[in-house]
Image 1 (tube, rainbow, N blue to C red):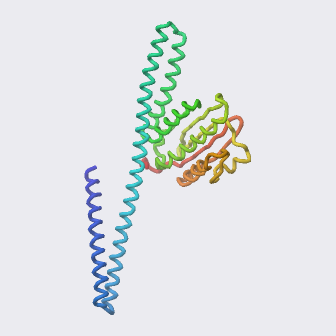
Image 2: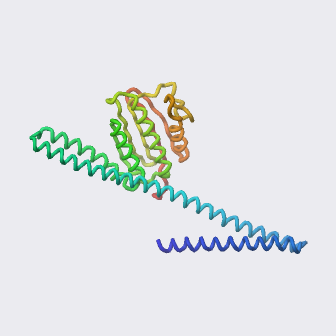
Image 3: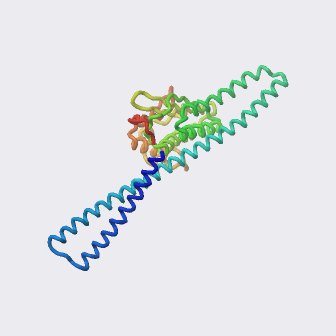
Length: 292
């Protein structure tokens, strides 16, 4: 860590010095050309040297721009991870508070002798805790994704939506930057939750699946109802398309498709009475374990 940091700082200082020297030389060169007006081979030689210095200056300046862009991208990624980790910690604190309330309920049931209800109540609490724990443990190295999923689970619960999560991959070789993947998944889940709000409570079901094969990751978001009318299925990814009256800009699924294709992925829509409405994403795995 220290040697790399030292080399980086040394190289940055070296770059600044070289750029400063190049600019000083070009200033002296321009002044010399104006004052002395050299001619012949000496002038050509000066022009060649000046061209080389200018090229060197351009290279170092371009390198500086690239480093700045990378630093800003890394800062944004870290900001997202910090935000999602903070949200996840807040949710865990809320769960701890709920857990204490559950203990009080169980204790109250014991006091009044309702032992037949206790087992069912404990099973419900245990299932809820297992859902959140599975998300955290599976995506422990991708806290920004785990945090997003847990927030959506909480939103779905508050809206009376059954949200099933099936994670069979840790996304270790996902080559999509956290910011883009969060926008992709967030838009799909928001779209599904908005859709199921139009159907009866017993039909408000969403399922998120993440699986992998040797070459790619597959992410599926399903809402069993409502179905997208067949005439609209070819247009859902178009910019501005929406079936919402007086609300929505029709950008969510357009953004999803744009970002998926930007990272060499594929997205397709399937719709049937048996399986509901499913958005299926596929992303190729990165060639190394280095992630964005």
